[in-house]
Length: 157
Image (cartoon, rainbow, N blue to C red; front, side, top):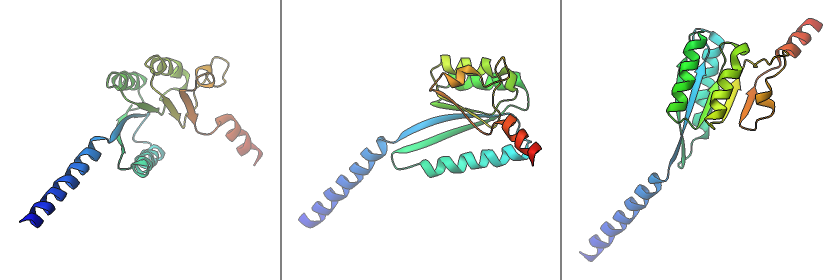
């Protein structure tokens, strides 16, 4: 009886430790707005983003990804960004519908104090250079190629 009780108590302690450990899992909410799901390249991109976040997960860290299709409509994408802000996303990943309108979306996310990662389409500033809100803000970054440089290289080839 003592042996059974000792095993039972040990089991309770182990289960209690497992329950306690699972309570410390941090889940980060990631809002991802893609300019258009029908773009084959962006479908690959979405799949790679999802796969990448899975590789980052541990027993202590999980990621909740919320993907949204902007349907190549700037108003739709603006609504998505507003929703992500309202939902309190921990980070927003944005593939712009219109690079020329990036400033409005960047400013909204920055004002909400949410880190922003722009992908694949570099936003344009007033002088056709990168938007200064990216360059001067550590909470915002662009991941992708320099389209002008890529075009120059293609022309040279």
